[in-house]
Length: 321
Ligand SMILES: C[C@@](CO)(OP(=O)(O)O)[C@H](O)COP(=O)(O)OP(=O)(O)OC[C@H]1O[C@@H](n2ccc(N)nc2=O)[C@H](O)[C@@H]1O
Ligand SMILES: Nc1ncnc2c1ncn2[C@@H]1O[C@H](COP(=O)(O)OP(=O)(O)O)[C@@H](O)[C@H]1O
Image (cartoon, rainbow, N blue to C red):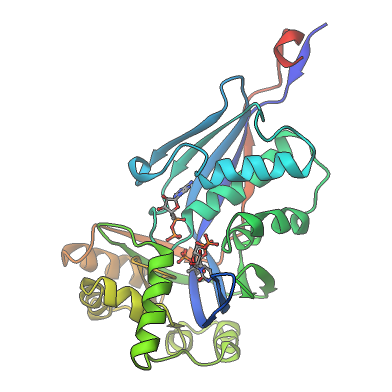
C-alpha cells in the first residue's frame, strides 16, 4: 500500500506598519508595555512548508544573506513551537520551510515575525490540524511580540507586549510609500536607546490611540496623517541620524506625513491616493536617501494559504514510517 504525502502549502503574509506606537516603561521581564495600532501592508513574504526528510529552512530574496537558517530562524522556532503544542517531536519535525522574502530584514516591518506566523498557518494546513486562529496566535506570542498580529492582519490594536490583539474595523484603503535603509536596526537596541534618551531627558511622547482610531474610521488620509506617531522614532533617529533626511525627502516629495516604521530604519510615508504614492516613490527613489523604495496599500489580510502544489504524491510507506 502507498502512503500519501500531503502536498506543500504556500502562505502569503504581510509586513506591518505601526500607525501609533506608545511605549511605556521597561518591565521586569525585559519588555515594555505597548499601546500600538498595527496595519498590515501589501508588501508580503511567501513561505512554503513541505513534508521532507531533509528538514530545515531556506531563505531567498530581499536580505536573504543576513537571515539565519538555523535554530534561531523565527520560522524554524514556529515549527518547533507548533510541533510541541500538538505532540509531535520538535527535534525531528520532518518539515522543510522555504521563505521568499520581500519584507526588509531588521527593517521595523516585522518580516521575521511574519515568516513565523506564515509557518504556523502553513503547518496547521499541512498537518491538517483542527486549530483556531486564536489558538495559533497564542503560540505565536511565545515566539515574538509581533507574531500574533501577522496571523490576523488588517488593522488592529495591540497592547501588553504588543501581542494582545483586538481587530479594528477599517473599511478604507490607505496608500503608503516605504523607504528601505541600507542596513537594518536591532529592535532591542532601539528600545534600549529610548530608555537612555528618557533617562537623560524627555523625548516627545505620542498622544492617545483613540484619536488615531477616529482618523482611521474617517477614511481621510489627511486627517490620519496628522495623528501618526511613534515613540521609537526618536531612538531610531538617534542611532541613525540619516533617517531625518529620508523623512524630510518623503514629505518634500509630496507625502502627507512620514514616520519611522516600528523600530526602524524603514520610513513609511502616507500619501493622498495611489497616484500620489507612485509620484512620491519616484521622486524619493531619485533623492538618493535610501536603498530601495516600494509602494504599498493597507490594510490587507493576515497570513493566508495561497496554494498547495499539485495533487498529493504517493510515496512508499517506509519513508514516513
Ligand atoms: C518594535 C516592534 C513594534 O511593532 O516591532 P519591529 O519594529 O521590531 O518590527 C515590536 O514591538 C517588536 O516586536 P518583536 O520584534 O516581535 O519583538 P521580540 O522579538 O518579542 O522582542 C525583541 C526585543 O525587543 C524589545 N521589546 C519588544 C517588544 C516590547 N513590547 N518591548 C520590548 O522591549 C525587548 O528588548 C525584546 O527582547
Ligand atoms: N525568517 C526571518 N526573516 C528575517 N529575519 C529573521 C528571520 N528569522 C530570524 N531573523 C532575525 O530576526 C532579526 C529581526 O528581523 P525582522 O523581523 O526582519 O526585523 P524587525 O524586528 O525589525 O521587524 C533579524 O536581524 C534576523 O537576524
